[in-house]
Length: 186
Image (tube, rainbow, N blue to C red):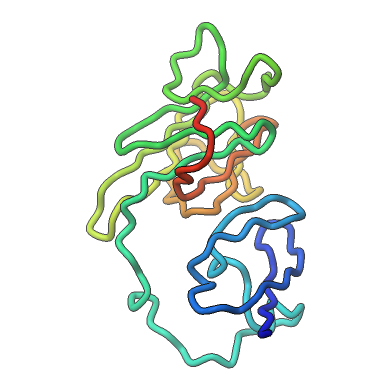
């Protein structure tokens, strides 16, 4: 049995998985932090074995592996497991409240984040030549937004990728590929 060592890009935990054909395109969920992404996004080679540097694999042109993205994706709320389906176009994300006008409202009867604005940020899902692109748009919320644990600046428009972690107030969201089997809650 051939074992592949990878490192979670979120919590840096070292994981071992079976190296089977097509494993790089399969989804992997870190058992420690629940980060979910394709195996290809986890660190491989010497970095996956705890060392520094690159692999001994030949250099590959990334365009050879690029597929046209046609998945509008979804946002998963870590604290509640809530799944927010994205669609092409603009959608405002914010805290669930009676007076909220956000397209995608985050929260439930059991969970509310007072540090999240009712209109906290916008996600644009736009069609480009390379497929659908996810853009985070800072809309002047009173509360900050973090992307992969780093504050973003007022007025920023940032292209996201699957696996990115967003923090709105004290709430963590992960941009994921659409999971058809997940329970959808909007």
